[in-house]
Length: 339
Ligand code: DAH
Image (cartoon, rainbow, N blue to C red):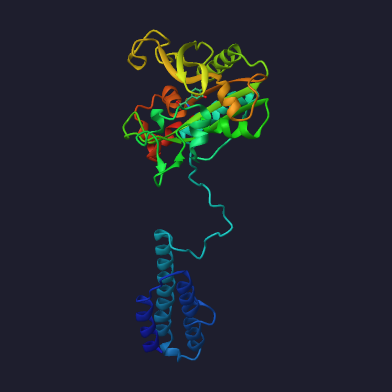
């Protein structure tokens, strides 16, 4: 019997388990009621009285060694993160590392929410567009430079399939289908063939607004712009409109806001002018209305469009535009509190 115990002692010492099931099998083999050690305990009754002491000591040693070995193997599992027999499978998997909203999404939503409060609803259009919706319907002349391959991405050299260069294409898509009154806000991604640098990218985001109804005037546009600027940048914000040119609006303007970094006093960011440009706007050109089947004698409208990255830069002073598309969580996590 002592020999048998010694063999088992050696065996136990060399035990190995690769997973929880194997470990459980070992426990059953050695320590369970029907296991090796129990069997030896039973045989122990038949051991001659004069040998009982010696055999008993060996037996105890074996029992302890087996117990200890199984415990050690178990601990190894929990330390290495392997499946533990004690694991609670009903436990929730929290804490889950939650992501944060992208700064562009935060600002885009903020812009849309402000216009929603003025009664605008969201409209969307395709990013892969045709010439009509991006250029022709919007009154772009045949030889307008934006139609050049250098500015616009065309697909497979087909000049009628291109990546939209602005969200103004959604204006046309909606006006073709819907009768006025139309009051829409169109957020979306746009593409331009630009060399990538800290201040330009080949894709970025815009938000477009369009309001078409009877008697819509430039005064309505100006009031909406003032409301928008104050809501987005704070009630002290001032706006200024400068005459400009866009093929699809007449008259056209660009809107500046008082620099929110220096409060209008002048700083490097606003190039010491106290003003920063944030959007283009104007009264929808009657040609555009007619192109979409809307009677320009009855209806008028205003439109405006802005770059979301530019506004985000203004709000959060992001110096390098490339940060927005690099997916660096150290950058992205900084906007958590703005969620
Ligand atoms: N589409 C113009 C751009 O990408 C922005 C713009 C200007 C949109 C004036 C408008 C507008 O709706 O009225 O630069």
